[in-house]
Amino acid sequence: MKQLSRAIEEFLNRLPSEFDELVNCHDVRARQVEHHILASCHCTMKGSLPITQIHDVTAVLEDRVKEAFPQIYRVTIHPEPFEEKQ
Ligand SMILES: [Zn+2]
Image (tube, rainbow, N blue to C red; front, side, top):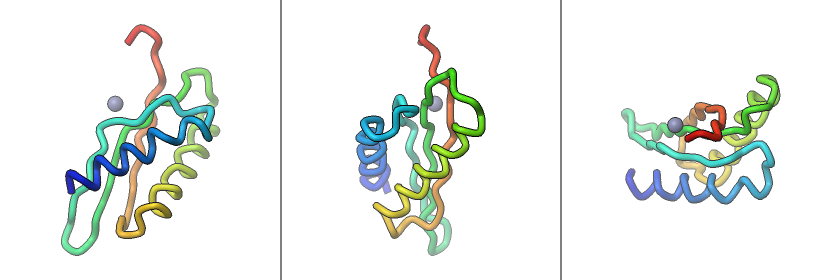
């Protein structure tokens, strides 16, 4: 599961070149619940985006992860605003 988490994180962190809204991804977790693999992660998005756009990008990213890792049953992305001070 650790290796899978790392692979998902690497995959998502290649996507900012395609998705202008995305800053980075971190805290990727993959876990097995009974016979399903569930994944979750945080994705930092540019702070000025409207919530509907963040919603759309999050949904597309979740689909992309599921496409790239068909063994994953469900992926949940938690969007976070990007704060310059951090
Ligand atoms: Zn976070």
